[in-house]
Image 1 (tube, rainbow, N blue to C red):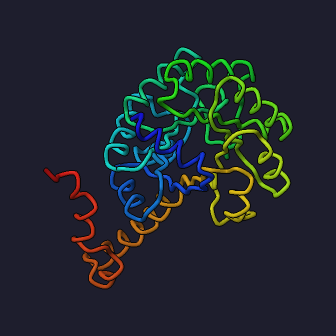
Image 2: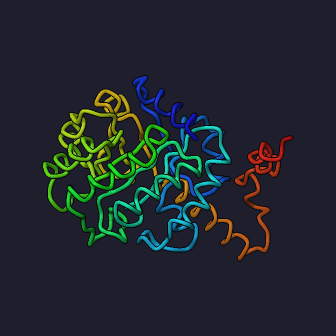
Length: 277
């Protein structure tokens, strides 16, 4: 637990710009590790969808912890996990931080939405006061100390504007957050303004491949140490499953597309390490 936090902290303060695709179970986490990434991102939205729910705060902390523990135990690289709003007030958030630490994560991100939250890209997002969120961040940091990196996320930009979001983030950093996460950065000007925050930063490529793209070199120069892609792997998996399901429905087998499927050796090799003695 703490050693993975130390690993992530060292990578961040070494000036690295690290990429973490969103994962939703142990197998997808192993795919990311096997591809050579530095960390996995346990995406709350992806996990919720894998259970069969939309990203509307319907998955409980207990349910999330089961999946997050599966993910962190499946890999030998740090896990950065989505903790939504901390599942309640400051007391709930403190407990959340302790439980996530037990589950083996290196860092978590917690957001200033009302509880229950909504996906930040949905309509109807609401935020709590900056002081209430700062209290949550302080409670989480007091609960886990240096054993877990706390990433404070604000969803205020779409509601209150970027200036308010940056002001909020400064308050969260002052309350003890280790890393800043301003959601919904859409332009180069917004990127530069958030980049001026005095801390390492996380950038969310939730719409990877859509809208304005930002060069990794620019993100690194502005101090964005963690880049997450919460939905890309899951969208690819859904698309692939759609195609296979269509093939099975039409022909009763996948003979025509066998070369598009991974081999049984590749499939089993991804998880063999968990049976090694």
